[in-house]
Image: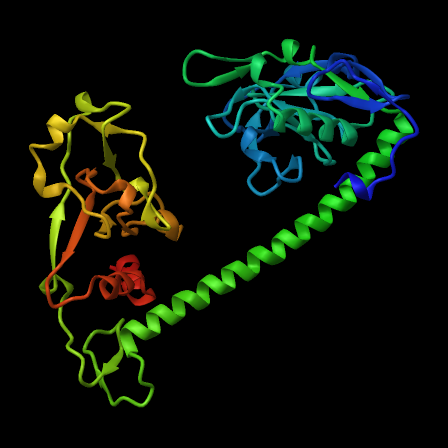
Length: 377
């Protein structure tokens, strides 16, 4: 990557281990020297049509473009006395002070590049850059720090929510060129990242089209067969339509044995042992490794629900019918790494009878007609 860019005439040691050498004429100092003030946010009260104002939350952070997403803005009643110091100006930085998680540490920073009046929520603080520091450059600087987890030592966690000590975090050092060069670097990054984002969007659209094509191939083949010239008959099932004349139309229950999981006691949950599979673990046609396990001594009492590699499982509950990936009826094959695991009461194992081929059963329940049947009925 560095081969694309012209080297600076001279470099120096930054004195910061993870930074290494930096251009000779760049300054190295704490982040605190770039920020005029940090102002904590406010949540306000329920909208009253008199003092309503946009309150920006962590959920409004666009972590890819490092700015604010306008999709679902929140309005709260904010008294005039609470607005003065908190109103955002274009060019302010917003820092997440509370929240985060195992995969997304607290401390993300985005740029406020909007013209509408707004304040931040109580989980977000406003950082006003000092004169001589370009806001867009600073957001990229904070992005580099966040990616490198430089914020991690400043995180405190006591009640399950991560809290960022912003005073401690701003003591961390970074490297800063002149204001003019900050502008050039930020403009370059804006242009380059926009090109990359465009490519990502195009690839995502292509992936979705390929997924649809894949699904269409599966759905057509499991309901119409491989012979396009085969005589057809009405299946008698509205959502199924016509099927090959020589095919048998019957209920799925005649071809599989269903085994319901068991509602194991949470008192038996532990970090290691036999993997315990819940509906939320069934994703993308497989089962993701769970974080809850059971003692082998408990599982031994429920041999009937112990799962074998390659068996088909279906979730009996879902969180959002509008989102296919989280709707009821998620289908997955048990990977060999989770053979011997056990499901809870919201997961059903489908064990095919001798007349049904396992792979065919898998494609049947993965097909669009079956998915449609679940969503409608």
